[in-house]
Amino acid sequence: MDKKLMLAVAGAGKTTYIINKVCAKYKKVLIITYTDANYNNIISRLRERNDGVIPEGISVFKYFTFLYRFCYKPFLSDYVGARGINYESNKNRYAKSTNLDYYLDLSDRLYSNRISLLIDKTDAIKDVQNRIKKYFDCVVFDEVQDISGRDFSFLEEVMKIDMNMFYVGDFYQHTYNTSADGNVNTSLFDNLIKYVERFQKAGITYDDKTLIRSWRCGEPVCKYVREQLGINIYSNKGEQGGVEFVDSDDKINEIWLNPEIVKLHYQKASTFGSGHRNWGDTKGEDCYQDVCVLLNKTTMQAYKKGNLQNLAASTRNKLYVALTRAKGRVYLVEEDYAKKLEV
Image (tube, rainbow, N blue to C red; front, top):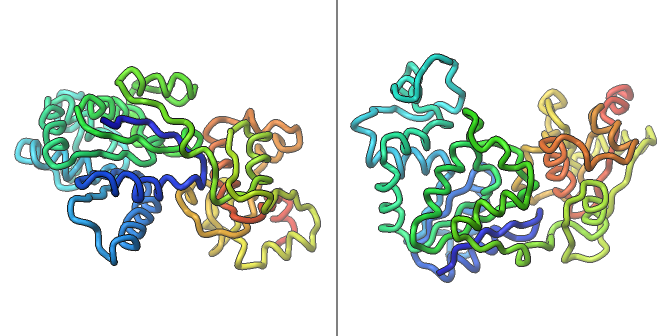
């Protein structure tokens, strides 16, 4: 029986692995992913491989849709009567977990970060485990690094199912939290070794060999990430691309005005118009040749000191995402300086 945690690097081909290896081996596969980008990518790749259709027996869900439709509705819908999902947090600090107003907003929508807790509190988890095993012979959790808080406790319950399962992700692309509600699993992502141990205690084998080389980034970009961020990523492409800090006014203008080079910001990219994205929002995307990474004040200071590796983990991880979007070159530009140029 296959029960694996497979931690990948950016561009290592985890979607290709899921589709070409897992979906080819097993006939009834449940795939759960987190971001819209990865969901759309998986659907697109499945259709490409199967004459434009999703093969019978393969189901793909975004994480909260899976919780709501597959786990909640069959067992708790009549009791709770929810009418959808609210992706904001509950502002009622006085609600108790024994009452439904802890889980429901005033429009009877379930708070996304409390759906898994509701399943646990109502003892529906056994029903969920049995339902997964009834309909599938393999379950895949893609982007597993974003399943956090109480949702990770739910994941540990899924690990108990006697069936094939794959948990695929990139520890250093942990940029979102499915749940940061309550004092639960708050240190989960502080240490890679301890993170892996949580899976191993549940009988999950750790595979850190299959997906360690990037098909997207050239070795110069990978080397930069290794040396500056302390993240072990290697390339399958050889000496292609590179990382360059740009401080020439003419060069910055040239990059800024080039619509083929996406501009990546730490935050508030939408204020700059089209062609600008936030670092973390590009996770799962694989469509950029060259990218321009704008360094905000904090990151610029760390860059000057050669101290990017010691950025706050959330900032470092988002920077890692941004740097590894490029198939070619990465241009680093000080954001405040670019603003002064009024490019």
